[in-house]
Length: 275
Image 1 (cartoon, rainbow, N blue to C red):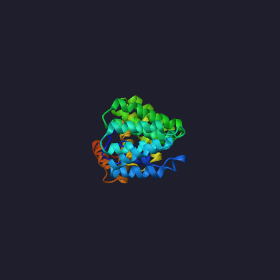
Image 2 (image 1 turned 135 degrees about the vertical axis):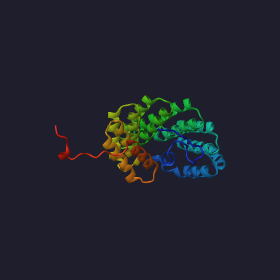
Image 3 (image 1 turned 90 degrees about the vertical axis):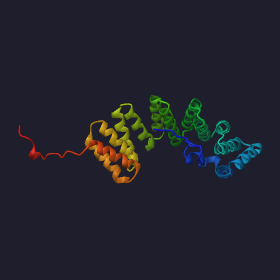
Image 4 (image 1 turned 90 degrees about the horizontal axis):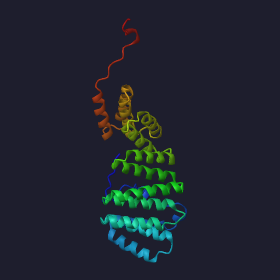
């Protein structure tokens, strides 16, 4: 699992677009148009969006408006490469979000954490990412909580805290048992930690949720090979070649098959050696 923030993209690095820009629930629907317009401007004309967001903050009257103006301000600052300022804007917005909308506060806290990561402040990112997931859990937003705990786990693996990453992935699975990515990454991490039994159970769940995902097939093959189940490994690697020919995963699957060597034919029962 890897973390690779890219501040040159239009959305906050490390946070999926659907989390950064998706409309809010309930009361968030009404003012969403103003935020959407500001975010669109930030992607193409960040300085204009920065000016717009600052003016918006001067006229904002509700907690929601303050939070949304900080949201747009932060994304404009990201586009301008001013990552430390972006982090502060997202943190402010997270604190300003309405008390009954913890999901929005969680998203902004996650953006602050990812801005810190992009700026190279690894230590500063951790509490922000942890808080974001905790807020989503408190809000009862299972899908968001799972996504944010997966993000936290990726970060923890990056800094060598694999046991903590395993705990974060456990929370992700508990928050949303149908999150295939959480199960896949759990299987990968369990394998790396030498817990092949756990890895097998987790990859089986991932395969049920996302049967045609070549990454799932690839990981299933690696786990099988490490567990001494060469036939299962071949079948899993072969499935990757079938569902995603020409892909990066298919190239890796073929290399693994080559490492396994030619398959030895099984002798028919009537040809077994006599005692």
